[in-house]
Length: 473
Image 1 (cartoon, one colour):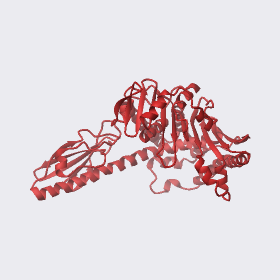
Image 2: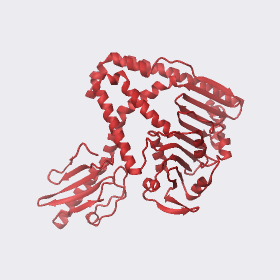
Image 3: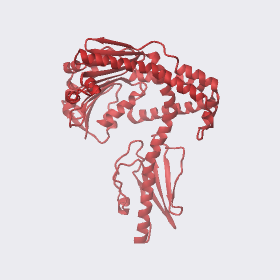
Image 4: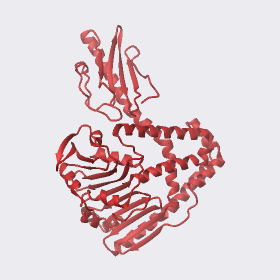
């Protein structure tokens, strides 16, 4: 269940197809009535944001006037497009065309693991469930085939939607639901409000009664009395800006919540000025002289006029003010896009530079498995040579590199006779070749799923692990 939730959240960063308010009811109906946390994502809108941020980033003076930076971002865009293509091959989904709304409703009871349901609309392949959870198995539930895994049960309506729950009983209830549960609508009074055309995410959280009671035990703590008076919180992020609503128990708690939102609203204004301060102060420094600055950024850091225009484009002087209102026991804050757009674009620029580095970091972290296992194989081979007078050759296992998802060790009599049997799932396949005066062990992976393998080799003569294909993962 957690793997599927992470996968859908990851998809939310990338996706775009038309969506309607009717879809909102369709994805809320299968959620548990007693859900404490509800997340609603318009995957189509996120896809449009992806395209818009990419176009606006390329048009920034600091990028457009510095070919090295522009080429760097172009290569990163190509890398992302390649990853999207690999996901389409793996799951049969075009993440930029096939997905619509998605929602998750989770119940977080004390002392129990979270449970709930996940719904995603779109052009779903009939075999999507078994591709997401390959270790699952088909079962019949209420006259239809579902896919059962140890911690989730999944049903796919081909071409329409996917529904998942933590158990068959939860999935059965979700499949039968046709209307939004009244209790869910009562717990979150604004959850079903009609979203705009470019609504990115809606998050609603109910403060558990037990937590509120615990907070209210000590009224001498100001924050505790504020949180203890909250019934629910809802955050909406759209192209128009940010909207926060706090539902309170009574007038006193609502007044406290209004003051809190006033302070939060001012922080958006102050934050813009603070970032402007940092940016202009940095221009006084010779940043290009810092040790370790990538050569692609040296021209960018030297082009001060382009940097100034970029600062003004990303972080213009704030216009408009956050609006705070109080309606009965509900306090609301509305922050216009003008105060949030710059930070959003800045995050996009930073992500464009950081994401490839992060991917490389993740790949290198996974590569440590191959290096460690090659050294383990080397020790086992040397031990066998001492005990039996010869090294032992073993064919490749698994026969194909697992890809971006680790797989359980398939079992191999040759390796296991040698004493090599990984207990954890592996990202690499392994092989040992024996020559007249030594042996060579190989570890191969394909972490990005593009069909090109990254190969590590250990040679008994050099006793060193080397990378044979530095440009492939």
